[in-house]
Image (tube, rainbow, N blue to C red; front, side, top):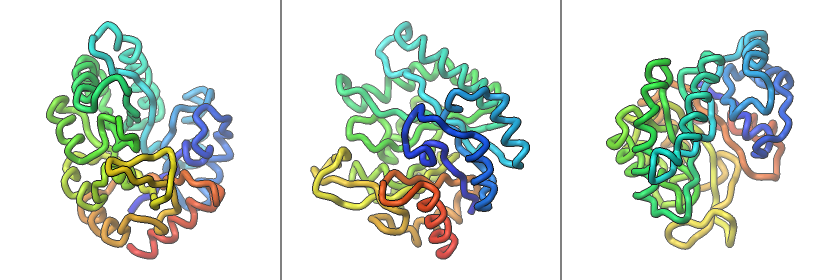
Amino acid sequence: MKFSVQSYTMSLGDWGKDCDIEALCNWTKGVGVEAIDWFGTYGSNIKEVKTIMDEYGLVTSCYTFFADLNFSDKKSALPGMDDFKRSIDEACELACSVVMMPISGKAEFDRDTQRKQITDNLNYVIDYAKKAGVIVTVENFDNINAPFITSDDMIKGHAMCSDLYVTYDSGNMLIANENPCESFEKSKHLVKFMHFKEFKYCVSSDRLCFDGSYIEPALIGNGLIDYPKLVKMVNEAYDGYINIEYQANDLTPEEAVQKAILYLKGIL
């Protein structure tokens, strides 16, 4: 099982927060992890990031970016298509063959409509990625309005856009009250990248589930997910990198990632 550090986690989930690229690379190498998933490059030149990565002997496991294709017409989606192509070019600069688009959803559209809009517009530009040798994925997203949450959502998305694959996020389908192990079993044939994270039930939070309950982030191994079972399933079906994700506040990202890796190695 190969682990990956996620820049979004290491910057405490603050999009656009200053990130010391070299310090992150140095820390990653120091804890014995060989890969980083970059969520953009925080204003740093993409070529400089690749140079620093090379100096530390690190690889980019995934390149994560926003590209808004969630429109009912192609014209409105054109800026998002430009963002998509630019991001594919950036992934290539990092010698990265997998990209991921997080899609939180828009309240004015139902989930099925959004899924169709996104895949319709993605079909116009996904050949750009395919010709570059880059695999495009979306993740299970932890918002009840998101178009991609459950394994069924992922399967439907792939049917609508045959070159769209999955970043399996082990916690986010809990929003839809789907069992993470069952979700992986159903969608594993589409999985090209993975996130491991954890949630626990709470009285109230910004993560409302389909059944009216609430969940909040936790340290991997201290929540709802049956990681011993999931790790066994993943080991049998997937050999790529796995991001260690942490969104709670009781530990620093560095502490949480190291504890999570030790826990996961202990149940391998």
